[in-house]
Image 1 (tube, rainbow, N blue to C red):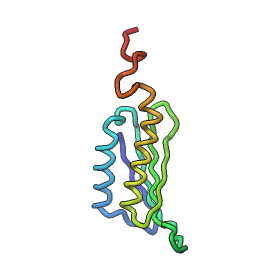
Image 2: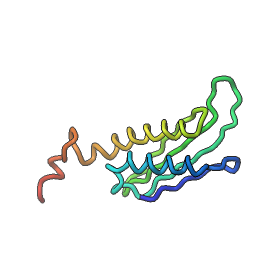
Image 3: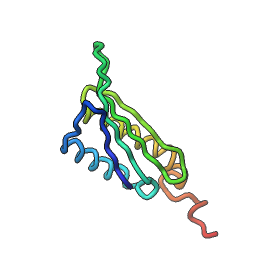
Length: 116
């Protein structure tokens, strides 16, 4: 699984944020890693200056083999928090899409466990 990290022109992704992103994705996506070809993480600053509106956005796109892209977005006041929130959303979305495809209640599906 390839992990790509992007940011808009006004943002510099610090090495500690990049390390955090890679560690979290590797630990959270272990279950689905063999089914994902690439995960792209994008950071941008929305520059919204309205009171109470978060302006740091993180978008994560996961590309499962043979399926449509799974994309999630989270906005908070800090990039790390935005990434963490988006990572949780991604796990939920992947569990819904990929988890149900091959497992039933945490065990292999009878359809995939029986020899043909």
